Length: 330
Image 1 (cartoon, rainbow, N blue to C red):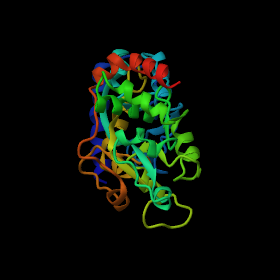
Image 2: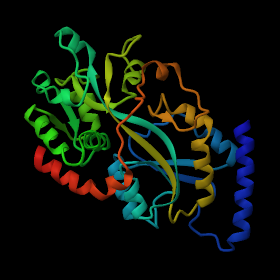
Image 3: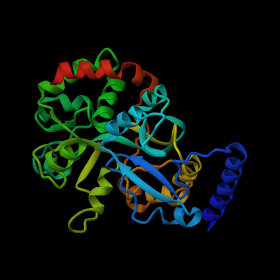
């Protein structure tokens, strides 16, 4: 009820502003609908937008378009004449690219998480091998042919892992590290789904690689979606490998429904939606007032000192870093 009252007030303010500032509203506007563009992995809780529609009379249409990289590239191609109103999924690895293209009129951080190496606990225990504890360990002979990572050219977690190695080893030394990984048999998967659900031995695919680049929130997902009830996840996270990923939500420049876009963004940042995200999208809410479910507080990893890079540095060097990575690994 609090949300409904707050959103009603916001709606009235927006409508009043629209009436006083625009005498010729777009004929293409759809006042009872707002379109949210997102990546394929955007799987919100079923019925989560019902409260928004009940409070505003506006229906939410979700349109997905590949992974994050594909989503942003497509959105940039239509910048100023967008296929939707609100964009979900822009992250700090691509933020400067979106800013350069003037893709959004406004944006806000909406969630965060960490891209980390995960490992299959049973695989290591059954062989009496200690799991790696650092990026350096992954290049040791003990872990030869055990690691699968996503292609950073096409995959957001793959890019995050590459950026994490650059943050850790430095702009002048990461190349040598990747040469060591290649010599140690690192496997390159085309995307996260292939790496985690097919190649990785610790999840549904039961593949041959006990080390995989995934997320700090992957262990609670293993508990939630286990075929048979389990009390602890079969996987764990190597905390020192984690690269912080922050996602943003924003209004697309040229939207035909700017008022509805503003209302939806407000809803996405409010407590009801924020509290639904951990067990549907497996990310941490940006709203500090949102409570976390027990499964997340028990098993999700939030490193004290995650690896980071300035978005401006990423934008300046991303293409050259990826070109160098291709030369080394592929």
